[in-house]
Amino acid sequence: MAKERLFNRNFLLVLAGNFLLFFAFFTILPVLPLYMQETYNATHTEIGVVLSLYTVTALIIRPFAGFILDSFSRRPMQLLFYGAFALIFCTYIIPGGVILFAILRALHGLIFGFITVANSTVAIDVLPSSRRNEGIGYYGISNNLGMALGPTISFATYSLFDSYNALFICAFVACAIGFLMVSLVKMPNKAKNLQNERPKLNPISLDRFFLVKGTHESITFMLLSFSYGILSTFLAVYARDEVGIENSTGPFFMLMALGLISARISNGPHLRKDRVIQLVTAGMLGLFVGYAIFIFVSIPAIFYASAYILGFSYGMICPTVQTMFVNLAPNDRRSTANSTYLTSWDVGVGIGVVVGGAIADVHSYRAAYILGVVLIAVALVQFRKVTAPYFIKNRLR
Image 1: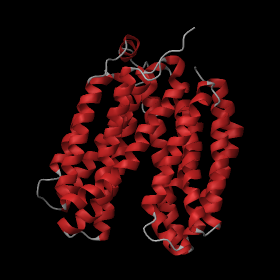
Image 2: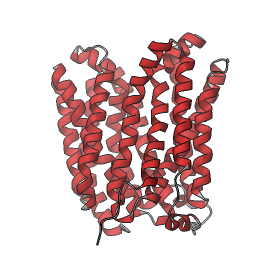
Image 3: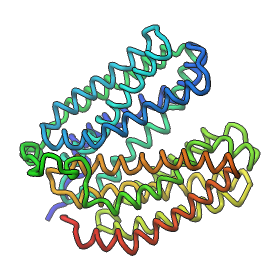
Image 4: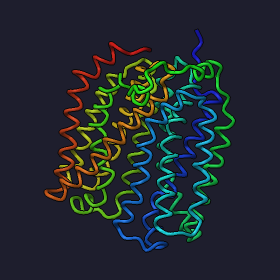
């Protein structure tokens, strides 16, 4: 039997559209604190609150996005929210104050939370069934490339034009092209039929908004994303105080993105052979190694080596856990599975930021990172003893 083609026309269009979405998002993200300071004379507290609204609203909408996308036709909803996401970039140019900007960021986060669920579900819809696990891994590369290239283009564009509006226009143009890409996707007949299925659930059932069968996977994933929340938020301060490196964030996350991409590419054959338990286990062990040298070896070369190891480890874990969520859900619950996966990650990251900051205030950032490693150990035990056996017993495909 001939192997079904993974990189078909529709999947390539979805990848391009998703890359441009994340590229646009990360093009403006690094400069927003400076923009608020210079344009609105905002305080550090105001900047923190306003920028956090994006994450909060994205987190709030995701469970509802999963339900809506499983209950109604996905394509019109995807195009509507993708177009709205692009247009919001134009509104940043409109003169206003901190309050107006806060409203725009909250609205943008709401739309981002919805469209990320829609894009990932449509990607799964257009993938051939026999190569879905492998395809989910490659889909994540489009996120990682956007995360890696967006900040680089951002600072280059700002240096060239010396204008924040130029960045907003650049992000809008990227999103407009992305919208064109996703609008050209032709949904397979099998996916169209799935969109006509309605979840036969109690109207107030939690399962409409959260994949209850994925509870064990959610706990594992939140324990793992806790450490990433600390890493991503306090990296610059930790590198300066503990390793003696200034301006470390850019190179560190570039190397981390390279590790993520490398892992997703190398994971393909293993996902095709359904080695999900082995991949997650190996990824957790990799996190132990990465965080151990990150915490206890204060040498710049080792510090940057840990970035690649951590990126590679998270790259093994994230698409594999997403595959587990999808494989636990019936076909008409794919959006709910994806929203539960994304929400679990965001909740873990958010708790990590809050708890990590509190520990750093009373002790040190190193102590916060050590707690993250302890929780990875807890996640490994929980995964091997509870999550993996449950998944093997209850998976649908």
